[in-house]
Image (cartoon, rainbow, N blue to C red; front, side, top):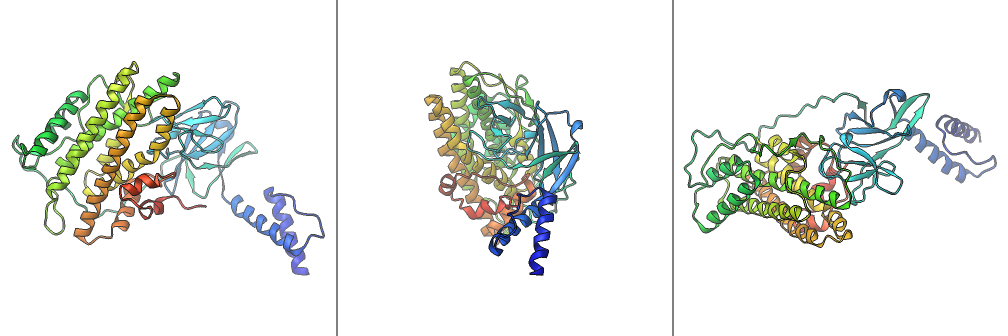
Length: 453
């Protein structure tokens, strides 16, 4: 009985300290007591994660980024009415910086944070998006003029130094001594990378694909690609996160999304030619080069991306705009640059993370256009989706091929590379069916999701 009284005292103290629900009156049963004690202890654990991030009066900007020790950085949002909200600062779509987004009322009276990359909205209250995506939100409280965020991560206003473990078994390209002749695939790949005009880039991509498929070009060759593809002077390329969303109506929003997709396709053309030129000289640990089918697969990917750009650019025109009318970002190329030293890393991040993410958001994007009666755009998006499945499959095929030839465990290697080169965790929802069609089962990506707290 004395033990019971002691535990009841702990329960009373716990409810007083942490604001946990009021305990039942005296005389309740041991079973009821145990239930309340469990709930109280849960509250203790949760309460222990509250972190003071500063004085409420000092947060003047709508969005403030906090860096977390686990890489899952948080954006603290202050609305005009003085309330505070918090969520992961990385957009679950493709990692866009939500801390540089706009806060908008989308018409339901509830505020959302808008990703500056592709205009995906996330409710400040729930983290849910009209696109079907879900972002992690965190409880925020203001007490005695100070702001507290409930998170297990250690937060800082300044970036946390990241120490990347150097890998000695990377598939790095060999330094090229001299450029190949004009009748090689790498010569034309490099030439396409240096073309700034997207129309000319698309046209030459289609020509080179035809020449390769018909045997007019037979040699792969070697040629050093540029550090970054050329872009037209009239195209405003800004750092990811610096793009601000227009306040136009429904059609303006659709044009903005199609414009963003066209920009991604232009970079995807370049990324496809870059993987051909940059890694043409790679040697596996067995001493063998990559087989010709590897290059054929990525010539096809480049051709598909060129087709996608054409379709999107034409649709943007039909809607009364043009490509280049809005600023664009270079986020996809940043991932290419991050993985320029390692073929396996390039396949993992660009083709098995970013392109697979495109499969995840497709159903919601398609439904958005369908709901607005835009059947022409829906047809284009379906073509892109079907092709992108084959692109993820190509990444999977060559990633597993290399791992098999070099005696590496595919899953472990993939997980290690994503943790090394991708910012943060992978976030649901996942298009399980689309990924499965591409050959990517859940064991590839579910272990990379943030563990439940």
